[in-house]
Length: 447
Image 1 (cartoon, rainbow, N blue to C red):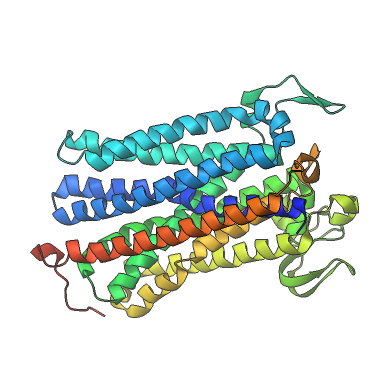
Image 2: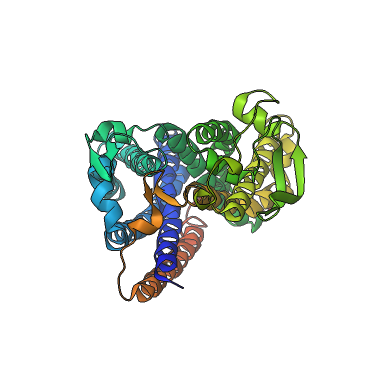
C-alpha cells in the first residue's frame, strides 16, 4: 500500500466510522423528546423508562462520536495540510459553527441526563430537544463543508491563488441544500430502522412486550415516514449532481457515451474497456427523464471528459446501485408497515412483520455508507472539484502506514467497546423494566 492509498484509506475508515455516530446524534434525541413528551402528557411511567433507557444509549454513542470526531479533525491537518491551507479560510465557517453546536449539544445533554426531578419538567424536556436540534445542526454544517468540496464557491482562483474569499457564500454553496436534505433524511431512516429493528427483536423474544412495542412504534413510524421521503430527496440530489458534476452522475450510472434517450441502468457490471455495462437491466430513456424531465434529451457521458478526470466507475456504480436497492427495499417495508396501521391491523400481531424490521436493521446504515461512497469516490480525482486534485493535497510523511494501522486499531477498539456497552444496556432494560412494576411486566407472547 503506497502513501496515497494509505492516507485515503485512513480517511475513508474514519469517516465511515464517524458518520454512524453523527447520524445517531442527529436523530435519537428526537426519539427521546417524543417519548418524554408522552410521559409528561400521560404521566405513564413506561414512557419515562423508555426515555431514560434511550438517553443512556445516546450518552454512550455521543461519547464515542466525540472521540472519532476529534480524531478526524487531527487527520485533516495531519494528512491533508495542503488542502487545509487553502480550504480552511474558505470553508472554516461551517466547521467553527459545528464546534459551537457540538458544545451546546454536550451542555444540553449534561442538563438532560442529570436533570430528572431537578428542573422544571418542561424545561427539562426542552433541554433534550436542544440536544436534538444542535445535533441536527452539527450534521448539516459538516455536510455544508463537504458540499463545498463538491461545488466550490465563495472565492476567486487564478494561477493557484485563492482570493476574494466569502465564507458565507462558500457555506451556502450550490450543493449544500440537496446534500444536507438527503443526508438528514438518510440519518432518520438509518437510525429509525436500526432502533426499530432492535426493539422488534426483543418483541420476538417476548421480553417486556409493552415496553418494546412502544419503543418500536416511535422508531418505526419515524423511520417509515422518512423512508418514503428519501426517493424525493434522492431525485433532488441526482438533478443537482447532473448539473454540477456530470462526470459523477455518469460514473453513478456507468453512462459511458453521450446520447439522446439515455437509459436508466439497474444493476450490471461496468466494463471500462468496452465502455459497456454487462448483465444490466436498462429502462429506455429513464436517465434522460430523471435528469431533464423528458425521455429524449441527451445526458452527458464520460466520453465528454478526459480519461484522467474519470471517477472510479465500478466503485461509484456499485455503491449507487446498492444505495438505490436498499432504499427501495426500505420503502417497501414502510408501505407494509403503514398498511398494518390502517387496513391490515392484524399484521401488527404477526411475527413476519417484526422479522422484516429485524432483517432491515442494518440496511439503512449500509445504504448511508454506500451513499457517502458515491459522494466521495464519485468526486475523484478531485478533493476540491475542478480546483485541486486529491493527490496534490497529500503530505508525504514517513510512517503513514503505521498511522493507518494505529487509527484502524483505535476504531476497531471503539467499535468493540460500543457493542459491549450497548449490549449491556439492552440487557439492563430487561432487568429494570420487567417485574418491579405491573406496567413493565412481560406479557405472554402475542406471537
